[in-house]
Length: 597
Ligand SMILES: [Fe+2]
Image 1 (cartoon, rainbow, N blue to C red):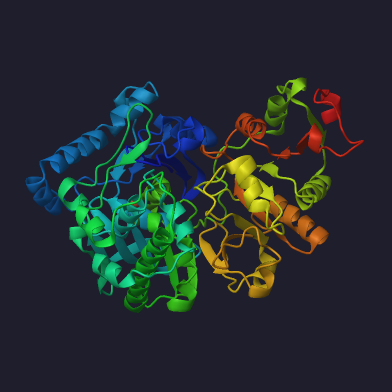
Image 2 (image 1 turned 135 degrees about the vertical axis):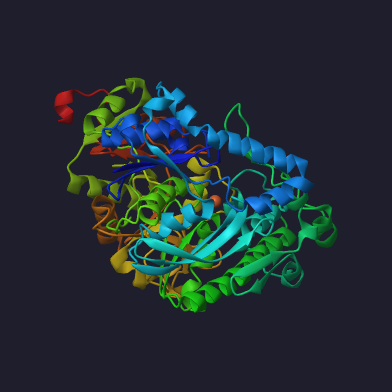
């Protein structure tokens, strides 16, 4: 049975394909069309998924979309009566989803009647929860989805058992932890879609001085419930205004904090204004307020479900600082967060919800790695490299796996910045050792160097470490696996001086634990670096420069030449700028196929 999951008409458009209960491929549209957070219809992502299984659209048995226009229809209608703009938006959304078969047919130049697949509309949070629980290692677990808004709800919790999930509670519009975080992110002068990450990084620099005031803005009001004080917000009266520009398919969200919030907390920061201590303290307070509510929710869920395992999904599940505290502040002992926990992951969730929740088929798949995107053969990489003009001044060598790891480790230990392009692209927003830029964690100056030469990010944002899983306990105060960089743990105080580059100002790091079983080459590279330096850790940042993470070899080369990276490893090839090449090892950029073989 072939099930195609599609997250369409929404930011983070994506597609995933599940064959006989096993995920085969998944990718965000942004990786293919090169538009960050691309919204709209994910035509290229669907094509990739079909190609990966060698299927045509007419071979697909079921199509799953993570939106159900009929979910909570009574509540939606009540709001629509008092809010004509919202009613209009709802009608547009319903129209779009009603036309999905036609959009698919038009994209793939078929007659709609040729698409024999049955269409399933899966409620938004059901799809989020399915995206975590049904691919988790747990047979039974508590599940929480929390985000901005989807199908008129902002969170849902459930207990999962085998192929079924049973809902325990939900919080509906306009009360939303995602909206709370986004509103304060805007207030602090960060207006771009996805900027919440930045404010989470900023929070570590401040103190939660405004917590008493923030408890009026958001508060728990029961074991599985929370409330916003709506005086501080506008989305409940004006609609959340979440849309995207048709011209470039970039998602946009209008202002959602109210004048009252400014009256209480002072004027909002303008984007160009410098960040002051007050802004840092407000960011810290926002994070602390979120954590208070989440901890209460998690504990309520633990009590109600009686489970020790927890699955998280929805945008709030990316709050790695909060996630890192679960083990100390709740009874949960095991936590699974899927790598694409946000809305991109809905395509996977909708597909698995159909297979298990709808069709009742048993579970036999676990997502224990994130490498579900496009991959390229050695010949394709070689062809891309052969296109480099000799005037670009790079030395190129082909090495076997052991040499490749040794040489790359030596470069990193020498302070070089290395692009690392291997295997299938990551699913989700984190680079996890297949499309990564790597650097030496021991150098305190490396954060500035990475920012100056490659990433051009705000200086307060931390860089993350990848560590071989066997060494996690030596460096961190927690050892629960974090294969998808969704947890931040305190670095052991005595180790903070050893890995200053990825250790944040509060002493934590958002780590990736790397397993030999699921990413052998990356594990060997970090091990080689450890053998050389005594520190089996590398700084791992995404392979991009203010763009979606590179997907194809040509994009990696483009980023390599555009930025001031020292070396690029793609498959078994290592490219070094001649200035960075070792004396006597330099080779011309032009090379013959014989030299490469
Ligand atoms: Fe969502």
